[in-house]
Length: 291
Image (tube, rainbow, N blue to C red; front, side, top):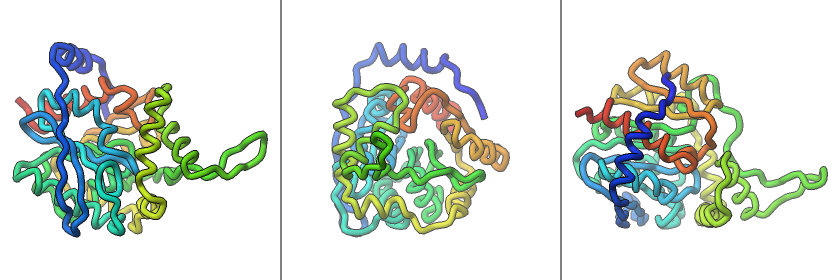
């Protein structure tokens, strides 16, 4: 495991301050079962693909699109029933979600991509890898979720359905629960408008689909087998709570790189995009596409 330094962030920030932001374009395509899926893209060159977490929209990666599209072709994906993708009647399980990623990569062309999954997107990316192999993968970045290693994580990540008010347990509405969940992804204050926008995006996923996405019916060994099935470069970025898994991954796969970030919440790339994007840029330049 390595520690973060500010040098790369400073160099990246200097470059970006001299370059205008690039606008993302929206695209839609049919999944293998006909569901209409959405992605946003910007930039040119080698392709990096972002897969968001549970109920989250592709635009949560807006800072990464703006920053990294100066150097790469950046794609942010809306999984089925999330963001601007169609609300699907079925397919909210890892087999279909992995297939949706395969359909996306087919849409993007033959060149290998770096697949970047955050939260539930880690599991969706590993489901793709488990079923389809790494032939279209140049590298992987797995952000702040379990990879099936030990020690296992605590909690299921679901928004609480009740809260304590004056010592009493009070059931809250789905909207209130989701808003609390969204706030809980950050340790730094976010604007009320941003929290509201992200909450409404999360509520786009219907309750039945959201519940199915929290109940993937696979053992932890499935994810562990997937992450160890590739020898392509892997970067595992987590907070302190997953440091044990990061250590296990480093011990069992010397080619995998783990980074522990402190002082940020689950949506670390929103809270501190300069630090996060510099880690990605260093990994892409140094491990995946050097020179």
